[in-house]
Image 1 (cartoon, one colour):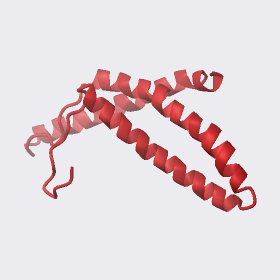
Image 2 (image 1 turned 135 degrees about the vertical axis):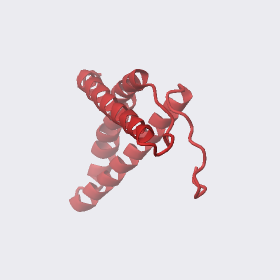
Image 3 (image 1 turned 120 degrees about the vertical axis):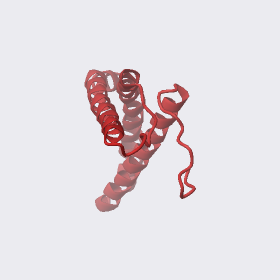
Length: 130
C-alpha cells in the first residue's frame, strides 16, 4: 500500500502539469491555425481543466497500479528469476513489457477521456484509419 500511496502526490502533480501544458499548447496551436486562416482546427476542442485533472488522477490510479504490478510481480517474480543466467534477455523482456504497458495505459487513458466526454472520437481519416 505504501508503494502505491507514496508516489501519488508527485504523480498527480506531474500529470496535471503535463496535461495543462499539453492541452493548453494544443489549444493555442488550434487558435493560431484559425487566426492564420488555415481553416478550422483538425482536432476537436478539449476542456482543459477537466482533462488536466483527469490526467493527474489517471497517473495516480491506473499508471501507478499497472507499474507497481509490472515491477513487483511480472519483473521481480517472473522475468528476473527466469532469466537470471541471461540478464540481457531479461532486460529485453522487461523493455518489451514496459513498452506494452505504456501502449495499454495510453489506450485506457484515451478511452476513459472519450467515455467522460473529455475527448471526442475522431472520424476516420482519408486513409481509412480509425
